[in-house]
Image (cartoon, rainbow, N blue to C red):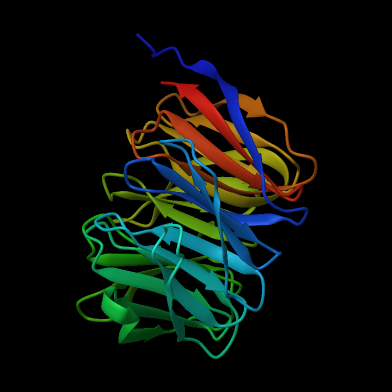
Length: 303
């Protein structure tokens, strides 16, 4: 019998800027939610207990990536100013600054064990750093244009990346080599901008022009294809149970996808303008979206 999923319910709306929000991230125990974007600042919304938000200043250009460390109280942010900052997300907002690329950074994330930071950039590279003091470890090269997204697999053995060279690449972190490349000729839709791993590490999802595609990592086989937006897919995230996904688009919507039944369940509207980012809280009960309207919205999903 199919599981009944209740329509998402808006439970909170935050606005810390009049400019677009490009990224948001939940802390490991959902006590905080960070957001950042075109105004170059980072807002840290304190959810539990609900005390006044913190505002961090330090980047000199648009902030496009943010991620909480899963294992300690650290928040990483990445900016078009070519730098990564590692913040202590408290009232003091102290940070470590590292200029780590030669062109705009597009994304930053942590490994599940919290020991590794991954970045990618318009300089066509993917870089790995030790979390301690953001110490450089290795650089992966092979893409021939901007790298929009790069994410470690749950077991830390592989990295999936998407690029303006119109490819999805899978990298082996032990041999530092590209082990798979999926292109338009292989069925990849145009303009891949975002990639995410399924919780079990067997599947990667890509967000392209209007489409969400799911790929089997072992065989490079296209498993599912959703034409669920009328404009560019900007972000997506798997529910922690791996059965559902939320995608967002510059068409101003978020879509709830049932990956077991292979169908779109709900269309969520609320932002004025495009929706740029989505992320689930660790237990999957709530997801957050960030939009062109400067707002961050929290929705409860009855799964």
